[in-house]
Length: 350
Image (cartoon, rainbow, N blue to C red; front, side, top):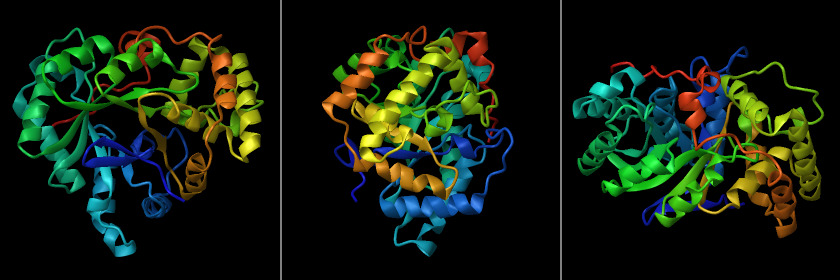
């Protein structure tokens, strides 16, 4: 079976399901310990099946080092080599550093990521800025462009931007290939004009939260309410449900997805993932992988294609539901409830 790929540039392609690594970072799991031996085995199987793209971040504690070790050891237990996989990291300067951020600070963090990932060039750096009220995000993006010209970065992307602020970076001449945005059947803020803007600028979306930390799944169908979140991401997405469609409508949505899934011998998560992949300007989705049991489910996404009737059934339900307030990531920046789960000071000096 061929895993779908998307060409972000003429000489750079990625798998359309990206292996997410936030789940592997220190402090993400709220109880269960991770089996890193099983994760290593899962990653090896994934790349051999064609899922060759990984997403991590400078602030996902421990993930860059883990992927660096994995990629360099890959040839010892696989036919693939380090250069056969793509690793996307992020640049997320601490909120208390933004007002004083210099080129040297940015280069130091990029150099640290290169060292951790054991690479000569970073495949992609996805840039995030915590507070738009603090000036400097355009200049910092231009610093990344300078580092790209120095050969330290291959592609520049952004994450959690909105149209107003992304347009300033684009207008400054920074070549942005994609934007990592939160997008799912329960989180549709990008549909408030942002997708249209990005399409016009040839900026594709790499989407996270597509299955909402596992909440959009058969496991939660029929539950009166999920009260015990297992991870930080589930805490976040329970807030999204509460502040948008609500739990009762969420259950209605899961039932619709289940009805469609039955036609394809698939899961609710498979249908929710395929639905987003079918939307315009979507290059890929990110699905967190914490064990080898996720591999078969990820493969199933590419074994099915939703019909027009399937898409219409989901669309007709969603159009009646409220969308989370504000522009992409606006609540996470400004609302105390949403900010509570987010840590803005994880990028310590190298």
